[in-house]
Amino acid sequence: SLIKLVLIALVLATGGQRDVDRAATARFVAEFGFLLLGLVWARRYFVVRDSARFRAELPAQLRFGLSFFGASLLLMAVWRGGELAVLYLSGSSTEVAYYSVANGVALALSSLLSQFVVLLQPTLTNLETTGQQERMERMLGQTLKYLTIGAFAFLLVVHALGTWVVERV
Image (cartoon, rainbow, N blue to C red; front, side):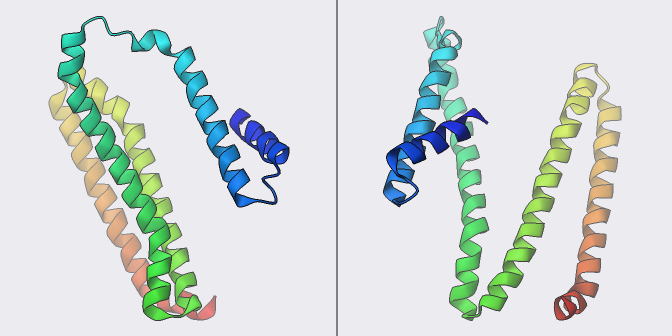
C-alpha cells in the first residue's frame, strides 16, 4: 500500500534501518501525515449543521469508539502478553512455542468467526427491515446451533489428538 512505500522511504531517508528511534519517528510521521491527509479529504463530512443533535449523539459515539478500542487493546494484550506470561510461569521456551501455535490457531478461528458474522450481517439486516422477523430468528438460531456444534466438535478433536500431535511434531 502507499503508506508502506512512504514508510520505507522515510526509514531509508532518516537512517531508521540503523536506529530504532528514527524508525519509530518515521512510522509516526507517516501515520500522522496520512491521518492529516484523510482529514483534509473528508472535511466536508465533518461539518456540523445541527450542533445540539451532534452534542446529544457524541457521548454514545465516543462510548462505542472507546469500547471498540478497549476490546482491540485487550485482544492485543492477550495475543502478545500470553507468551510472556507462559515464559514467566513455566520458564520453558518449548512451552512458549506450544502456546504461540495454539494462540495463533485460536486467534485465526476468532477472526474467521468475526468475518462470518460480518458476512451474515447484510442478510440479517435485510430480513429485519423487510419485516421477516421470524425467518431472521430461524436463520440466526440455525447458524448459532451449527457454529456451537462445530466448535464442540473441533474442541473434541483437539482434545483427542492434541497430545499425539505435540509428541510427533
